Length: 439
Image (cartoon, rainbow, N blue to C red):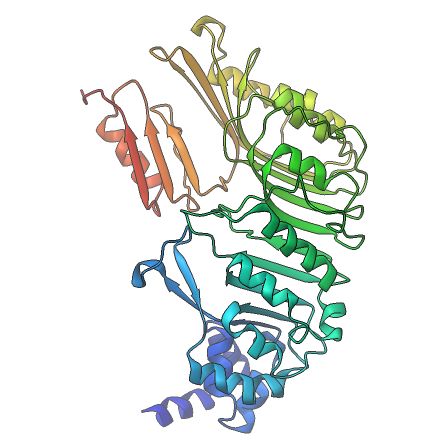
């Protein structure tokens, strides 16, 4: 049966074979076809299958006993497969590999299997904090060439929901990274949007810096940590995407005035609601005079008006002459009487000058709790959750959303749930908060 399948595949034109094989993982293609015959050898040496390799298995968490914030677990390749890669496949294609994604248990074995003259990127997945420190401390794993070659590093640490790592472990790990890789241009630490890893760098040593780093993707504990990242220790930083656990004022005095002319792209996502939009977020954005791309996702308490189109123009857009692309997901909470609250039509009118953007808005007033909320976002929606959906929900298609929370003081009717089902086809978690019976 196997020979018949291979003969049929071998009869197809090379262009068709390439199209078929692109639907498989590169590891499967190399392991299955390398050495079968000269033609397949030539095909699998194509850069499509050798440039980027993921040398691990991704297993759904429910299949093994493990407490983790991720839905999936990273495990080593089965030993026979890994053994063949290290002894035969990697040495044969070593000069074609540009990016390797590895997991901690097999990382040393893979990196020492051969030389990688064109390797510029490493991704390390499923590693623990102290294990990562040991890896970066071992002088035998990273050769002199790799230390100079690697310019892109992705670290996805395995963080359990019931434990956090001490700040000194974070500090040691990150400083080891910058001392190991001398020409690092991109660093991403737990870049997944569902990551729960937040670094606090208040007590990091002066060696936590780089004059080559251009792109940084990281989660931080507080807004102070964000300001410390931008205090000059990464003076070439051009792209900065940050997820901040809390944004609130602090007694610690950190510069939030010096301009950041090199920054071209900035993305800010906050976990908890803030009341410091005007005091902290706006002054930081005013420092980014040459920004070209901006993405904002946060919820904030306001005292005078919702954060609408007029607010974004006055506080942000008019201060960024080079801005080319703005995306946002902003929820404002306002404690005021219903007579002073603008309608959804008023909010939409405030966005009338945003010509090239599809903007959705939704305004609600909760009489019992005596507050109102306004959600404005650029469509298509990008977050993986959509919280506090009310009867005012405008509908749409949200293929990224996996978690939904429904809340209202008015009853949800049958048609509303049909709309929710159509809008969120991939929802995995649904929370309903409503004490009113359907009519």
